[in-house]
Image 1 (spheres, rainbow, N blue to C red):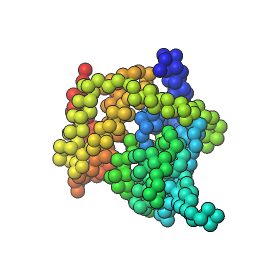
Image 2 (cartoon, one colour):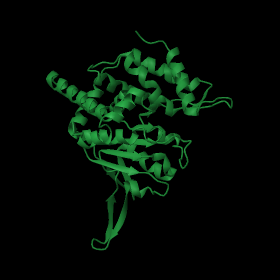
Image 3 (cartoon, helix red, strand yellow):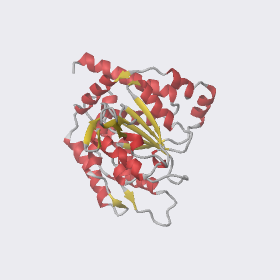
Image 4 (cartoon, helix red, strand yellow):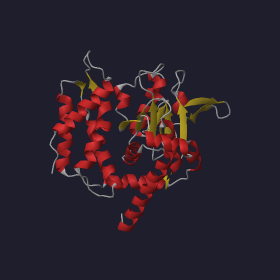
Amino acid sequence: MPPETATAVLHRAADLEKALRKVIRGKDDVIRLALVSMLARGHLLIEGVPGVGKTTLGQALARALDCSFQRVQFTSDMLPSDVIGISIYSAVEQQFEFKRGPVFCNVLLADEINRTTPKTQSALLEAMNEGQVTVDAHSYPLPQPFLVIATQNPVEHHGTYPLPESQLDRFLMRVRMGYPDGNAEREILRSEAGTAQLEILQPVLTSAEVLEMQQAVTRVRVDDSLVSYTLAIVRKTRESEHFSLGVSPRGSQMLYRAAQAMAFLDGRNFCVPEDFKPLVVPVFAHRVVADAPASSTLKKSEQAEQIIQEIVDSVPVPV
């Protein structure tokens, strides 16, 4: 990519981040992680209590991209065909015709994904991993780029089904959206944030530009010392007595790609340790299974994050 083109692309990425910050106040770190997921060709799982802006973030990102967008509100009575589509017999053509479901879009907002049954949740596995859907022995490619932004309520809430490990592993990262701090919440109340800003949000990037950025991210250089640093952290999660399940090889690949995207957003064509460290917990924490002791007051997910952070602090950073 010529230098002037690379500079222009970086400006567009900065414009996208700025536009999202006008809609989601006080959550700059979550916005950055959402952009990292998109540029790393991954999917994003947003967890939080109702009313903190999870759905708004998904809608804002979709509106800021000049791409096709579908929102699916997951409920307990949904079927897999409600997501991927269904084959219907046509009396005119005298053959079955495939009616595409909402998954055939660039950005799919899977709202409250853990309120539907595991059978319906699993309908997204092939789409998220391979960018295609198979129905009646026929495979149908999905539009590119393809990004799933899923929101979920904490599993302690009524009417939720915990996502299985195979489903969680398809998400590049899981981020939490907690309550805003006092200043951010005051700004939300005093300004036309949220819905009003969302309605006037204009597209910043096209699908072609997103694909161009994703290709540029793959060209970001990663020194071998940073690969060894990543593998050292992964090995400790597999050897830890606190985990019954460590990070998979897919998890290592996801961290590698996410770090490349982080460096790209910072305007560099090479990675540094600071690109990896803040991403380890959001990329790894949902891929491990913690053996929480009976005396622990922390939820398993919170304990996993705490242990992984301790592992990160214990592994020497390459210089």
